[in-house]
Image 1 (cartoon, one colour):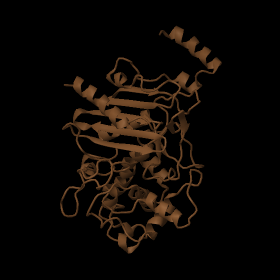
Image 2: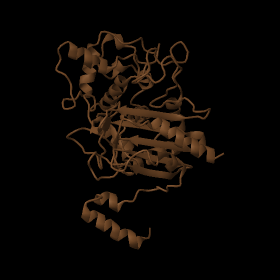
Image 3: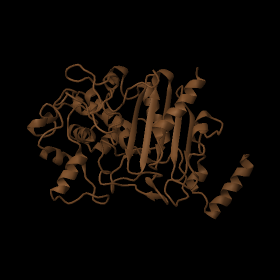
Image 4: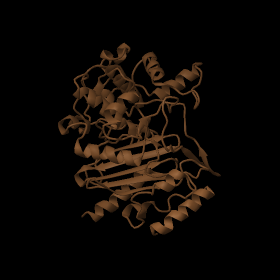
Amino acid sequence: MTRGVAVPLVAVLLLAGQVSPSSAQRPNAMADPGTPAAAVLDGLVQPEEPGLAALVRQGGRVVFQRGYGVRQQGSRARIDERTGFRLASVTKQLTATAVMLLVRDGRLRYDDRLTTVLAFPAWGGQITIRHLLNHTSGLPDYEDLMDAAERAGATPWTADRQIQDEEVLSLLRAAPAGRFPPGTSWAYCNSGYVVLGLVVARVSGQRFCDFLHDRVFAPLRMNRTLAYEKGRNQVPDRAFGHSRRADGFVETDQSPTSATLGDGGVYSNLEDLGRWDQALRDHALVSPAAMKPALTPAALADGSSPRWPQGPAGGDDLAPGQPVSYGFGWFLDPWHTRARQWHHGETVGFRNVIERFPADDLTVVVLCNRDDLEPRSIAERIAARYLALAR
């Protein structure tokens, strides 16, 4: 379509209310329908549905960047490269980076005990910052503690009365014991990353959201990324979460746990995550030597390799009983023998993944504001096509 045709068409659509001014003024970048990514994505989402945004970077540049669907059911606001999605557990790599910056500053050490920063009961006296980062702390899951507190008569938490980080810490302090002695086993632990957010705030003397802004987002020009705190900041071009029901989609954007920060509270978008990926590639924030601990798989105290907990698959347990490779905020298990750094994020109404293949200089990001898509599978299908072309 030529420029002379496109401008009046957009003007007509704006007058008719069919597109938003922001989406009309900003074309969907890198949306060539003939690309390998488009071959996977086209047709997954209907134009009027909640949808997804996908980014592919190869060789240090963006080769695909496109949004599909709408930010909110019933809205005409299209998803594009600046749409803000709740990252959920993809946040953990950013929380880990905040800790790493404090270690670099000499204000914290990985082997510092949690009790040197925050008051904690005796059963957690051996927990270190490293244990929190690599999920070997043995902290109880705070959602289990919420359930127990409510059964004991506590006022229930809801999407309108959400649990806050300090309340999570209070529940942990009141727990009678941990799941296991620190360092002796592995269990994916949102509690640990909530606590790490509090550690960053205590050691830095800043609110966690302000530290992330000042030390991570602003230096990288991730200007539309933030740790969301209701009433204190706003998400630009925000996508709202949705769940599929038998008769269509319903908005399910918030849950009782949506206000915690270090484990999943960051919102971001394709443009800013492209900058984040470039910073990782260039070691813009953390040197290769300082980054090494984050990309070294955790080992248990006896030197053995950890495994996912036994039990039924589902929730946070992706592969019960199987080996797990995790650093600081990154899963590190290879994919078809290729070195990989990745993390998924799931919360009510959102599903996300970032997959980095450093030896192949390839990164794929998929962000979804609906719960019926499988972004990890989608990202791996996209990666397979680009890796095949690179052979």
